[in-house]
Image 1: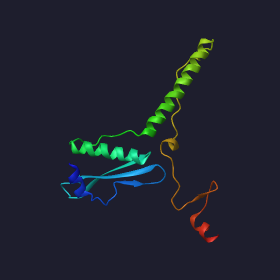
Image 2: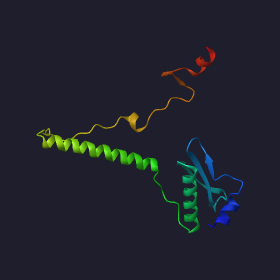
Image 3: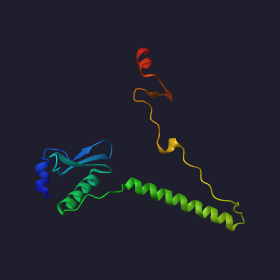
Image 4: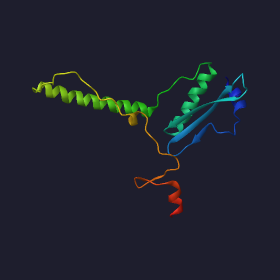
Length: 148
């Protein structure tokens, strides 16, 4: 899809990059129409960083679309930073354990058994939307309104 075709789908007055707070941006980039339904297809992507980062992402996706390539799955910079932090922690722990074994520590015999993650860790339970949490306590929605 060429840039001119994208401009027809998304007029110049519309916003492709929208601000969503401090250093947060939402990309809403039209990528064509669904041939079966005729509805517009829009690529949505949240970006953390400067507006220039968001503009670079839009330029990159636009160049991919204009060359006829599909939009690939991406990994965010925050995910890469988290991975680097975890790798650093693992390297430090490995060095500490190797030093302990060199100094004469004995590894306990037996199989390594890791505890299964709790169900709450996998899918955190959110309170009902009408149950506000204030000062660490859940308050009933209607009693909170009645007894102000």
